[in-house]
Amino acid sequence: MTIETVVFPVAGKGTRFRPATLGTPKELLPVIDTPLLQFSIDEALEAGAKHLIFVTSPDKPGISHYLEATGVAGKCEVTVLMQTEQLGLGHAVNCARDSVGNRRFGVILPDDLIVAPQGCLAQMAALEHDGHSFAAIQEVSREDTGRYGIMDVSEQVGNIHHALSIVEKPAPEEAPSCLGVVGRYILEPAVFDHLAENRRGSGGEIQLTDALEKMIGAKGLAGYAFSGRRFDCGTPEGMLEATLAYARQKPSLRAVLNEQTDMANAA
Ligand code: G1P
Image (cartoon, rainbow, N blue to C red):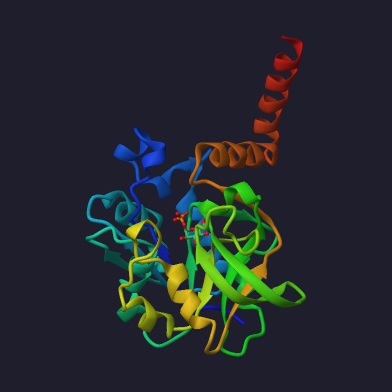
């Protein structure tokens, strides 16, 4: 199975990466030579995507320029939409409603770089489902629950955990579990009805997590424990880890890393 439509919410300001993001959208910051957005596009195409929808903001013209320069529109349909108000991830996804139409769709948050032999979205697209929506999950440390959507689950079948509840960025003492949502989703279009309610949640924003909470009762929501390594490229630390991991895969860059390690050990 494949997923034909994928939404990329790429309107965020990237304040953690200033001043770089004053000139370059955060999704175009590179891991050595490849922008985060490119990894996401490749992952969507691997999952079978035929329609890529980018929700960006008018002050990030670099996103459209990049898409034009890569010629990705020659491989599939590309839609660029503007989120003129920054009202949260749920609002960004809801901006894509008309373009998505009444079909199951994927969401990729480029900040979460996932390196795996088979892309995370392709793994999720291949899952058997009965009208369920899926969010990728991984174990996070309790002190970090306030950075994630956190899912409480019931029974587990293979890598699939059926959700009992999901809550956006709970404090460690309130988190129902340590299963954090990372930026990959496959959603039923019914999610748009919940997003359209425009309810403000954590941080005063319209949260995708809150709409997913509403999905639990009907056809259901499940967490998918993906295979692969995830880098939180929304933080400088995660970006550095991704850069080092990428460098280790390339012989010429690995030689530089080894040299640096030797120098550090000798110092
Ligand atoms: C968003 C979601 C959150 C999820 C996270 C994954 O938060 O709202 O539920 O766990 O992405 O990276 P953000 O990182 O945009 O604050």
